[in-house]
Length: 139
Image 1: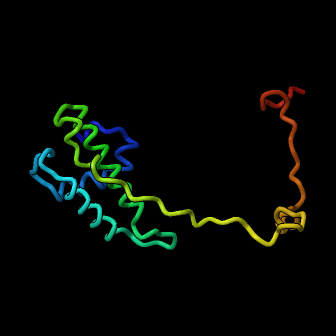
Image 2 (image 1 turned 90 degrees about the vertical axis):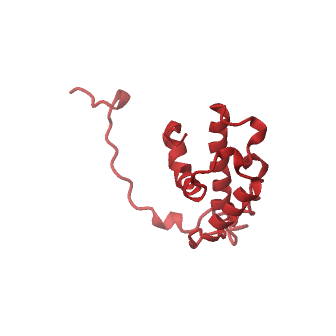
Image 3 (image 1 turned 45 degrees about the vertical axis):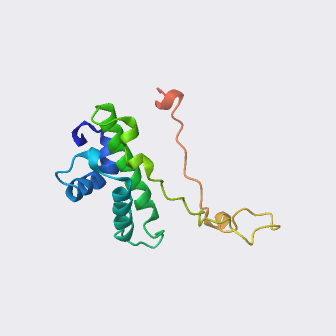
């Protein structure tokens, strides 16, 4: 079923599909339980790469559930299993944490939106008149 996926689905989910194939090699897809998918999600969350803006593997777990659901959606479309037989759809996605982004403070009441921007401006570059639709005018 991986061969029928489009390029975007492959880019997003292929690593998880290959991990599922390694982990459950040789087992029919209708024999997996929701608890096994949830256990693999916890393994993926625990093995997620930690970066500066990491959320503890939370989005890796969310993406794994999305990959498992996409895989089972393909199995349902090909009529390998019944729609009610998808264990991936019985596992809930982890909730997203609130954003860590915050507004800039200290600018309220000064009348400036960004105090650094005016000092960064240099002379304006010369603009060449290109005439209509970007073509040079004939002389």
